[in-house]
Image 1 (cartoon, rainbow, N blue to C red):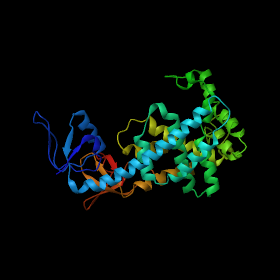
Image 2: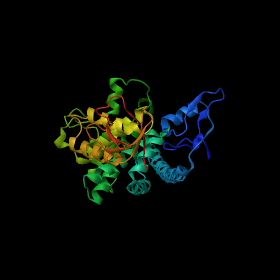
Image 3: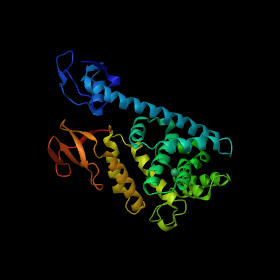
Image 4: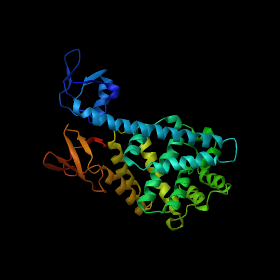
Length: 346
Ligand SMILES: [Fe+2]
């Protein structure tokens, strides 16, 4: 019966011996399935290690190894993007060699499972802008594939998404990092970043016009409420529409303090609720369907401690799927007290 250090615990492991504090209080019972929520409590309770069921450790370690490999690749890409964005601050030239390498990296990030976990796990406040650029490029590449873009168009979309906020390098740090509300003047400056970005991309003769257009229009909205020009949906380039969805989704997942991986489903639900009239409904649907599809078949831990499997997800209510528990089916749309506490991604 192996003892596993808290830092090596992952959701899905099964506790093989009651966890009891020195004062005799039982914290966890044998056979409890760990969720990320429970693991966080173990840290708070200052437990160092616990007994874990042996036969599951191997599969979980394989999953962990795969995940670590992917995190390394992601961090490597992150450094290149940092180099590229920082390099632009003192000059007008994009370091195309770094960008080309980054695009190739992102095209290789096709495994949604590892990608979603990595994005969820790596959140470094100081590197937000670089992470955000990569994440938006990755989400855009998923959408591009799901709507059937050809490889050459897809590549241009990834360029555009990676560079979507490059214009922020032309805006003062004081405004970008200002805590609290911006005044009208400052907000006006921020709203200029798509135009700065467009100009930076246009200066480079190797980058096509569609790449610049996606950068220019990623804050335009279907009902003309966006900026910089407030155009309506039919005047927004498909790249601008796709990047808008990816941009908003990543900003939502980064701002939220939801614990564990169930956050992805909550954010999808919020995206659906908030996007009426502003985002292209077809693109939102493709994105939501693609993401929710990926969770079908996943193991979930419910707030009553039971473990089940997601059978179907109604894309309009992503946080309330149909779950199979032993031989029973539970429709979470009807069971108001039961919620998903954690999702285990295989
Ligand atoms: Fe932006």
